[in-house]
Length: 223
Image (cartoon, rainbow, N blue to C red; front, top):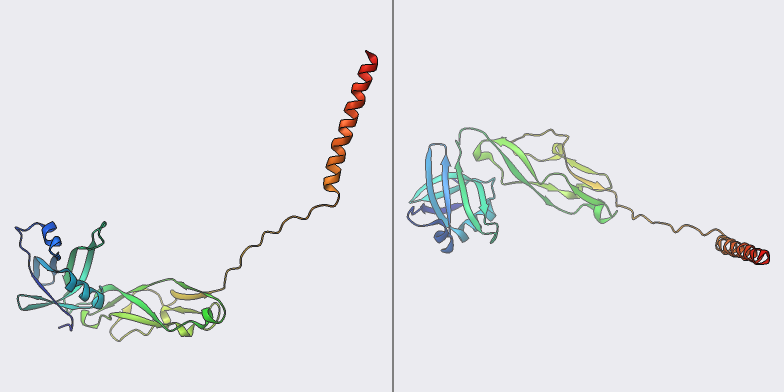
């Protein structure tokens, strides 16, 4: 059994879902291996505490009237307006069969390539798909960024410290983090003025004006 326990109770089907939420209760469903689909409910604040600890990749125990069932928090729906929990799915896997799920990638340390060379840390993945028995499922995979010492240094799947019994479902050459070179700002240079260019334009206009004046004077003489 898991060290994280969440108390739940059967849902009162006569009570409307919106009324449950007003009382700080979240409607839920429990399903999975050797478990009939059960409509249940739990305290919103207690679920939040559990979710912060477990996420979606750590087994927890649902305590339903004293009977505990090992489950994963399979799906969490949020209200689009209030951003509060609106519905939760709990999935009970077969503990003897491997499952495939995503595990979060969290980081520790500081990359010298960023601190010393002004590089930019590019994150390609924040989770990774793994396959293992439910009991071996890691809560997270931690990556130490201090190994990124220079520009263009990278960390790939091959560099991960994967626990025993867990297999990663993507190739070892897939990148996770890269230190990119700092981007240079483009400087738009002002075009140089050609010497005498402005004078030429003015002189051309004056000459044109003079010719026009001479033509008018000739027309006057003809008259």
